[in-house]
Structure formats: C-alpha cells, structure tokens
Image 1 (cartoon, rainbow, N blue to C red):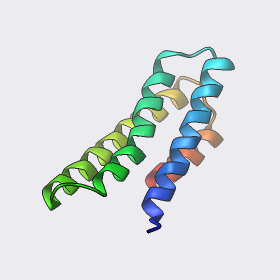
Image 2: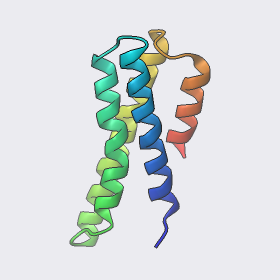
Image 3: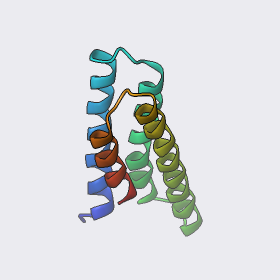
Image 4: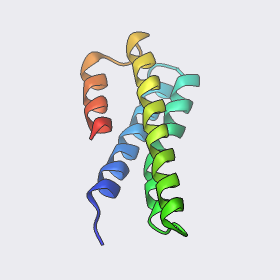
Length: 100
C-alpha cells in the first residue's frame, strides 16, 4: 500500500543524501554533514520500520523516534544555515519538506 508519509520521508532522505554529497565535496564540511545524513535518513527508516511494529505501542514508539530524528534534523539544518554552509533558499526548501 502506498503511503504519502513513506513517500515524502523517502524523497526527503534522498535530498539529505544529495546535501551530504554537496557539503562534503563542495564545502569540505564533514562533521555536521555526517550528523544530518544520519538523522535525516533515519526518519524514513523508522517510519518504514513502524509499519511492522509488534504492537500499537511499538508502532507509536517508532513514530515518536522518527519525530525526534526530524527535530534533530531541524537543529543541524539551522546550524548549517547560520554558519553559511547552505544558503537561505536551500534551508527554506529543506525545512519546508521536513515540516511536511
């Protein structure tokens, strides 16, 4: 079954992977880029994992962790923006996708 949440989180993960490639190759930034890669791709992985939760409580737990990873991703995006590694256009675009 198709799920808009799974589709959006997968597309977002791909954008984060591309951001990681950009940051490491063009900006030579390796610390924050690794952190945002981890948290930004974990969102979709946790959403997929929650689909086969052993119980409603397990499902809720996985979704809650996915939300925490999304919140952490916001933090890294803000740091990358405020430190000048990404511009406002990129920040706003990624933030908009993340909020969805």
